[in-house]
Length: 229
Image 1 (cartoon, rainbow, N blue to C red):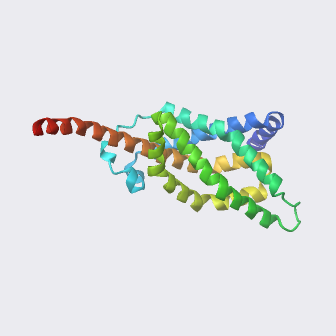
Image 2 (image 1 turned 90 degrees about the vertical axis):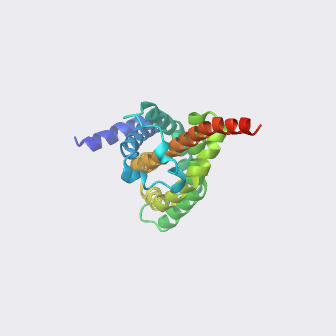
């Protein structure tokens, strides 16, 4: 038996019995793969040059990157695992409000466009809000960390999203059956999720460097105040 066909059959049987948990596990595994890829490319100098300016102003002060950060991969996999039910439900909502005509019937292209536009207008920006909010809270434990994520990375990631995902989602909504949409997007999205992991981690390191610089400046400011007094 063809390995891909066998994998598809296993997936279909699992999805038919337990659709939500199947989506969660699949998305979690693909999220872990994405972060592993991101960690392989993040700290090479030629890739670091492609970061937005606001994310590399203090790059020389970033703490050294461990060879492999297993906790970072776990965070990213857990996030992808957790959001799978929401994404799956979202695709069901789009199916309900924009039903696709049968194969060979007119109007399929228009329905796919409506689904894609709705997805990119509503879900794309809100999913990035959720991503940077959750990651900011997990990594910093406070809302200031969330604000820093949005200041440093949100607009960059949203613009990158609109340069990639409209075409992918148009294909997804037109061709893919419902049970394959999230795995299809997540499989093609390995590079996208690697990018999100990359830019999120760069934002984290940049803020750590800024905080370290501020801590080092505080004793100097205190000493100057004592001299003035």
